[in-house]
Image 1 (cartoon, rainbow, N blue to C red):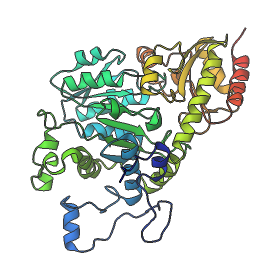
Image 2: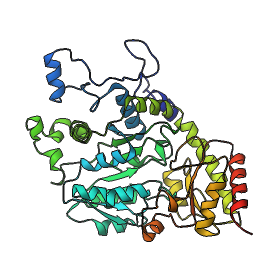
Image 3: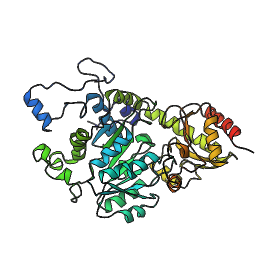
Image 4: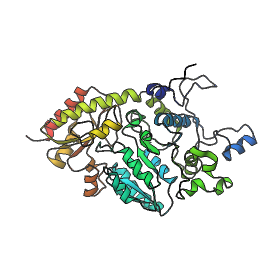
Length: 431
């Protein structure tokens, strides 16, 4: 008998984690809008609370609709498990909560989304966590920043807003040489364009709000566990390896092996922090993912056409898109994102801050709002919005200077997108 051929990406985007409802026969995953779930008997309840049996107790922890999305994301990213959260920021918090204690440090890219820089550099300090920001273009910067208190390395695969590409394998090597995991935010690339786990990433996070749901209608986040990092390789992660007093002295690593981090994130992190994804948002995201491969192809094709047009426009000073041969990140994008460099990128408009503000106020097809990953084309001026809270130095490092405009190219006709930018630039930038 011949071996079963692995299913393709399009098939898994539709079927992974979901099957017809066994009770009703419903083909679409139902919205299980229930706070709690009935136990079969006392023994069943005890087994669930002791983590001796998988199942559903309370929707802060586990829910059938959310579980289907977790299984789908683990499948698409090549992980052993996943945990959904209320937002992308909640996913970042959850990802680190399983690794950090007060006094610990982590190393992060300085090219992150502005909200992440603020979360890492300000909010997380109240947990006693310290972040060290470095330029990820050179993995040696990570090596130099790591010390005995470092517990993780964090970077975006494709960076928001600059559309730059990181060397996932290089960062993984630097992290592993220091005995810590690499966390990659794969929101902009999605598993359609990039598979960080294949190149050494240990954990992958997403804001499911963006391309995964894809329609601007559902907030959420997810953390995917590769199952490949050995948490017992050193004493950094004692809450995963040592006896846990809340579970009668059980060690998560001893009991769950490569699923230790995933189970801990549900049984402890979600239990105590509570950033739970709603069943409705899980349902909307499951439906969105079904068309993800189709949408990402159109997003990427449109973006390349728009970037090429902008690069030739005399009213534009520069374009930062990893899909352009002129980009210093072009070869990295070809390696890690061979199907396309995504749809979020920046360009610098001639005339600086004032011209940038006028462009976003002059578009008609584009929507001026603080989101990315929608079917619709979106535009924002980061210096006056998403990165407003950063210093001038941080804005420059994050590719969010005064002349910068961020685009999230949708799946409309490329000619219509270009025509809208053309008329906005004509209005906004002098001869």
